[in-house]
Image (cartoon, rainbow, N blue to C red):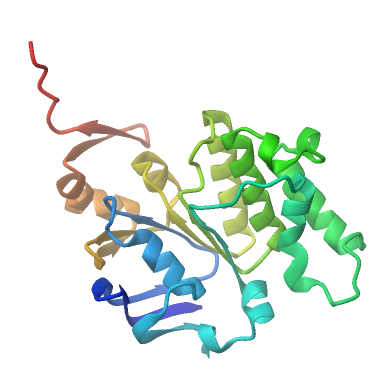
Length: 257
């Protein structure tokens, strides 16, 4: 189990995260939602160790995450950030990066276990025809799918995606959500940052609502709706139509005639 206990973090003198405590169980999907600047990405970075904590700790099965050897940490937690580099590296080479934590110094990448993981990830994100394509030649959506494939190839118990559906067209958004459900079936812990409230409500076991670096509430989707927390915070109405959630603005934008 992944546990955050009383974590606080800052950029310089500006406090970003305030006394956050959370626990994440295997076989569950957690989605972090909140307005821009609410601390969602900072929370993700604090879990993986990309953001220094002022206080508190993060433990995985009782071990301090930040004291784990880098290779062990990379075998335990994978993370897709919002910001990625564009380069001339081939798609399959990017996906191969996901296997590096498992390779010994002299091990070849074409061993059966690595080949299977890479092939699975590339096929899952429908990138077979782009396998030998330089990353810089891809569209934004294809590039995003490549980095998702890299995370899938890493095959860790805890998988974190920060705004993974950015740039991806609707077909692959749906595919990605199905992939997330498969990760849950494999008893992986999945942590997402999403702005798409409909997807968050559909896919999550628990939703974490953040505001100004603090946790407002952590609830299953149905309880989050019943309490009205999402509607109040985002100023929207939520309508359920045969189990499908429809999000509508509370107020219409006034047009200047």
